[in-house]
Length: 207
Image (cartoon, rainbow, N blue to C red; front, side, top):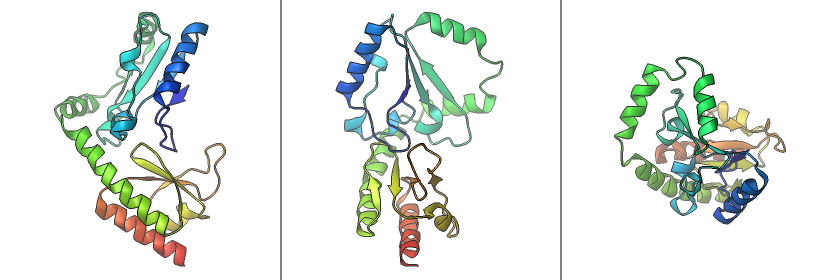
């Protein structure tokens, strides 16, 4: 089970490594579950999907999500891709009735007409990530470089609580294995929202 880009680091699996993993799974008959939910929002040079690399016999299931790609928070709409017909047949027989709501279906159809959305979003994220990197680095905050539309920060104790007191909600990541208090994930948002985050970070660090 792999995630590319990874959560919460935002790092993508290098194409050569991912293809090597796919080859190894083919050799051993191993199932590969690959979460690509943030793939469409990756920096273009880092975007790499296995969807077009699969063969009919591959034991691979790829997970994608409208929810992430089109910013439809609260609307649960995702899909799976596989060339393994046996798996797809079993899934269709066991999926719960009404597993996708009418609202989600209509939102998904509307999203499919937004042809320029992903590129516009990637362009925004590229510009605003550079701004966030620079501003956070100037404040002395440790930022992990990632390829997705979020960043992992560390090194500021109780950062989640301190930002929440200032009206800013970030993802507290200390419940991830290996991460600790002060590790948080931030979304790359509009410039005004990102500037508000930096202002709050400045207050936290100078308090």
